[in-house]
Structure formats: C-alpha cells, structure tokens
Amino acid sequence: MPKITKDTIGVGFIGAGDIAILHAKAVERTPGAKLVGLWNRSLERAKERAKDFGCKNYPTVDALVNDPAIDAVFVLTNLETHLEYTAAALKAGKHVLVEKPVGESVAQIAEMKKLADAKDLVCLPGHNYIYESSMRRTKELVDGGDLGKIVSAYVMYNIHHPEEVAKRYPGVVRQILTHHSYILLYLVGKPVELCAMKATLHYKEYTEEDIAMVQMRLHNGALAHFCASFAADDHAADPWTVMVKVIGTAGSTRYSYRDHVEIKPGLVHSQTYTAYQGSVMNEVRHFLVDCLRMGEKPLSTLEDAITAQTMIEAAEESIRKGSVVKL
Ligand SMILES: NC(=O)c1ccc[n+]([C@@H]2O[C@H](COP(=O)([O-])OP(=O)(O)OC[C@H]3O[C@@H](n4cnc5c(N)ncnc54)[C@H](O)[C@@H]3O)[C@@H](O)[C@H]2O)c1
Image 1 (cartoon, rainbow, N blue to C red):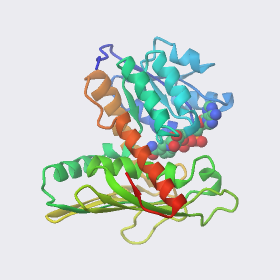
Image 2: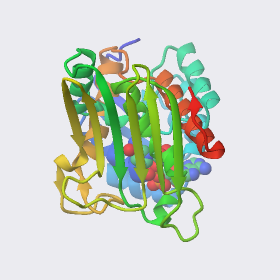
Image 3: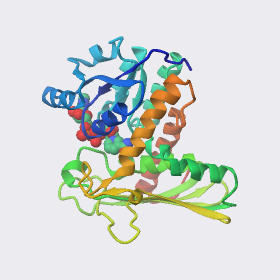
Image 4: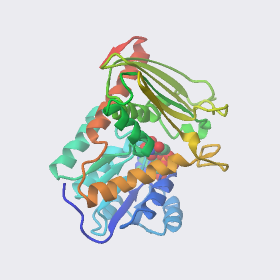
C-alpha cells in the first residue's frame, strides 16, 4: 500500500448526518489529519455542520472528490447511496472509509473492491466495534488458544430507537446484525449454518423489523447467538445494551457498552455509551494513521464486508423460508 507522507492528511465527508458528528470528533483527535470539507444533500444541514465542524462546504460531490487537498473520503450517507459515492471517490483516486452496511448486496461491495484494488487504494468498511481494545484482546486469547476450545459466542444489542429515527434505516437485520456479523467473523470466524427470526413490536407505521435473533453453528461445532433490538432498552443490572461474550473450555471474555456510561442522551441513545464514540475514534485512527500513513493492511477489509453481507442475506433467506440456511 502507498504511504501518505505529507504533514496533514486531508479528509472530506460525503453526508453530514448523525454519524458524521462522531467521525468529525474522531478526525479532530487524530494527529496529522484534518477535516477539509463536506458535502451534504441538503444545503441547510451542510452549512450548519460545516460551521460546527470548522470546515468548508463543497457545492457538489465532484468538487469534493476532485479537490487535491483531500486524500481520504468518508462516505456517511444512507445505505442506498454508498456505492455511488464510494465509486466516485475511488475513481478520483481517493482512499475511502464507507459506513456499514457497506452495500445493499454482495455484488455492490465486490464492485467497490474491484475499483479500490485497480488503483491500489484503501477502502475501509465502517466496522467500528472491532477496533475496541477489549475486542482485540479477545481475539488474541481466542487465536492463542488461551480460552481452550471455543464453545459459544454471543453478540447482544438492545438499544431503543424511536420510530422516526428507525425509519431512516433498514430494519435491524441489515442495520444492526451487520455489526454482529463482522464481530463474529473477527473473533471466531464464519458460521457454517444459521437460522433467524424477526418481529416488529413497537413501531406504529414502519413495517421493518425492530427485533431479530440468529442462531449459528461455527466451524469447530461451537454455537453462536445474535440479538439485535431497537424495540426496548435494557436497563436492568448488568444490562445487555451491547454485550459480546466468547466462552471457551479454559476461559471466557466479555465486552460491554456499559463499562463507560455518561448520564446524558447520546444522539438517539437514552444515555451516552462512551464506547460508541471511542470505537469510531479508534477506527478512524486505524484508517488514517495505521493504513494510510504507515501502510499497514486494514484490520477489517471489503472481503470481510462481503462475508458479513453473505451472513445477512442468509439470515433474510432463513426468515423468509422458516428454515436453516447453509453458508
Ligand atoms: N457504525 C455505526 O455504529 C453506525 C451508527 C449509525 C449509523 N451508521 C451508518 O451511517 C450512515 C448514515 O447514518 P446516520 O445515522 O448518520 O443517518 P442520518 O439520517 O442522520 O444521515 C444520513 C445522511 O445521508 C444523507 N442522505 C440521505 N439520502 C441521501 C441521498 N439519496 N443522497 C445523498 N445523501 C443522502 C442525508 O442528507 C444525511 O445527511 C448509514 O449508512 C448508517 O448505517 C453507522
């Protein structure tokens, strides 16, 4: 991978919604990087966010991706537009960080990979959770055999989202189980078969699911379980707000969003789960410093995004058919 040697890596944002706020803070705290400017579909929001972030506001996507001051483009718009904007940035020779879910289909992500590979550019999927130090330690323990034979893995997510916020996203299968899928891949590998169920429990009009669960069998015969819910918060003792567990015959690990909580609303969350911002911060530093400046291989790649999307599509098929699906 080519290394960027200039003093400051210039960043441009396509999209300036909620997640852009976390990315702006992450870029601000990354040494040797600067948010140069953004483009957003609505001009009013673009102006407001450019003022908040202390950057300029581009009139068009073309102007942003063709600005020589910009080395890396963050695609922070809704899922349906990821391929269009990622392709525009890669064709202009810029490295890209594209939010998850990366694409609407395996074919869309494969198209991004083809464009990135052709120009030797980094196109990093927004797989933020795996950049937490506790996740990395879990992986080291699993890979080193310190946990013994892995018997189970759990990824649980229970964060209430009001209907008007949920409507901006697909259902939780795509929107949230994508996180679960790349976490599982990173920690213990791809499942060999899965079955899934979903329900819609608290929306009045929105018809997509607000809760989904998946059961899986892994390569070594171990089982895994996912839960993704926008339907209700879990505020009980030791809550499963976001919880990742790996259990082996010789030890086990736990990662929880509840390790750091600030008593104030965090975007749409009822409290601020500090790990959310922290994981985006670590991801952005990995992209800009480890990958673009030092030339390291990304911890998570578009290949992983393709496998995660394969798992999502298998879960959808299982829900549709009411059956177990082989991967
Ligand atoms: N990694 C995470 O933990 C995480 C968390 C939340 C959202 N996300 C992802 O980030 C992306 C944005 O989510 P958000 O929460 O910021 O949503 P948002 O609704 O707050 O912002 C979306 C932005 O996309 C723009 N947009 C929508 N449709 C568009 C179109 N057709 N053309 C151009 N721009 C369009 C909107 O103007 C808005 O600025 C989504 O892909 C979402 O899945 C990731």
